[in-house]
Each structure stands twice: as C-alpha cells, then as structure tokens.
Image (cartoon, rainbow, N blue to C red; front, side, top):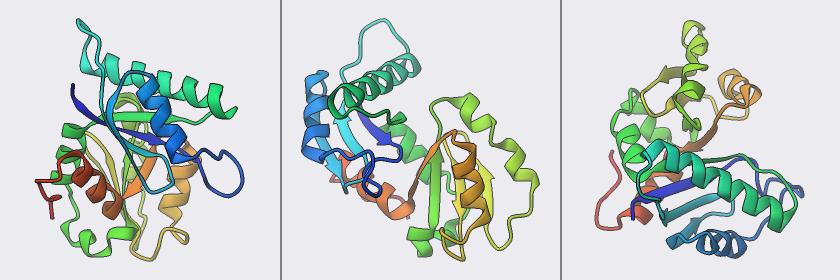
Length: 189
C-alpha cells in the first residue's frame, strides 16, 4: 500500500465547511485506507492508500480524491476540493525546491499542488509576471511561491487563490507531513 497525502482545500476556515479530524480519519478508514493520520485542523491527511490493481498511479490518486470528496459531501454536507499526492511526489517536490533561502521563512514559502499536470500547466502564465518582492517557479510536481512579505499581503498568493486550480501548504506543514509519512527520515532542508 503506497503512502499518500490528501490535501483538502478550504475546510475548517471560519465557521463554514467544518469537519472534525477524527471524522475525516474515519471517512478514509471507511474507504479502505490504512494508517490514517491527520495533521493540524486544516485538511491534511497521511495514509496508506488502497490502490486497485491494474490501474496507473495517476488514475488511483484521482479515484481516491473523488471518493474522499464524495465521502465528505455525504458526511458533512459540503463540497471540498481534494488533491491526493503520493509521498514520493511530496518528497520530490521538496527536494526540487528552486528557492533554498525561502526555507528560512517556512511559513511564507508555499508549495501548490494541482489534481493533475494540466492544473499545474495552467499556472505557467504566472511565470511571465513580475511578482516582486515575491518569487514564483513552476516545477514538475508543484508550484513554488515565496511570499517574502507575508502571505496575506502577497499579490501572488491572492492570484493563485483566485485561479482556484490547486491547493497550497507552507514548507513547515509539508515537512511535518513528510515526517508523518516516514518518521525515520527528516524533511529535506
């Protein structure tokens, strides 16, 4: 069973779209996944995925994301976008970090994940713009946003949110997710 991460977008922010992490863990366990752990209260789930034989990893990640989305809808009564990535994808995205200095501002350094490569490719026009003092790069597994002046004030972060194609997590959270996946290995620096 491969290690995966489910990233739910926009849950438990304010009073809308609320779901307890214990309920979320129960939903994934009910879908047949094992070793389910949540991080924080904002829709970060690490689990051992129950892949079906004869299907590609991309097909299985998409299927699992759809099933989690439907389970949340049935249980909590609201729609939440879900992106599921493999643990290997997270590790590779962090290792490919184009802004090593940004790690010192871990809470202001975001990686954005899309449900598929088309979603990431749609962000390509952002590379042609000057976001100073922020920085943007598009990688194979993620987009990288260094919001050096803070996320709330960042034009780049606001534009990414407006696009609605992906969900992002800061470097510190991603490091904690990586530790949950494999406690024996440290997150890339």
